[in-house]
Length: 269
Image 1 (cartoon, one colour):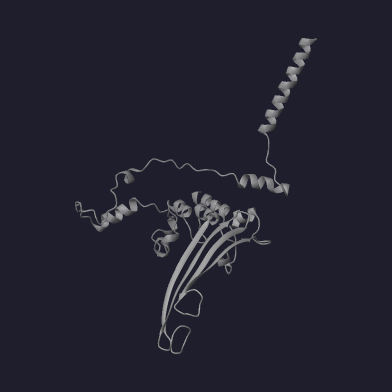
Image 2 (image 1 turned 30 degrees about the vertical axis):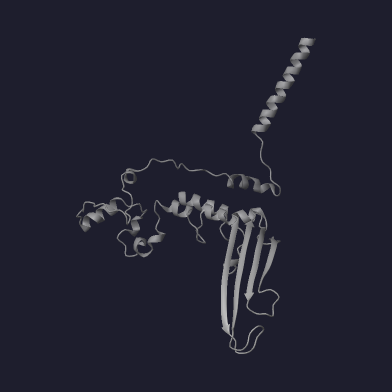
């Protein structure tokens, strides 16, 4: 009886272990909200990383370093004709061309060379920073902590036409001013913004009407902003990017991290 009971206990433990392993293997991530979007979210956030480990081409390995002003070496002059230069350019070009544009007066290489597809499109897209063609790194930079500071000094000397406190007509009123501004701002992924500002103003004047010849006025403030309707939520911010008040007159949405990644995938394809 003891042997039979031990065998039953062992079988039960093994069954539980097998079921637990199957449960962990087939476990799916569930999201709050509509269940119809689960398939889209699982696939949209699944990124395929391309193979980027390639050998260095011989043309790059055997290329000399760029010339500088301090470089005084003398290279051998190579006499080459225009026909040879054109042949080398056509042989080593990296531009993706179509048969319909060849020998055409409206060839995009002549009319809009920046819009022609080439093998460097993926690098251009990845390193883009302008509105409408930003890369992933530029989109992620919206969430970097930003520190700004400035200081402005001023001095004024004005000959007085009428009496003033501390001087007669014809004397000079001297005034020194300084304005210091500094602040730290952080953009959060859910749309909120937090900032801390530290400002002070300095004023010095050669007037006897003031208690102190120089004075400081300081201010320390903190602010937090969060959109209540449009631009709120981490899903919107990651797709369209945080709300930028500088682009209020431009229609459409900005380019967040998700749109930048999609543009990179399109360029690679």
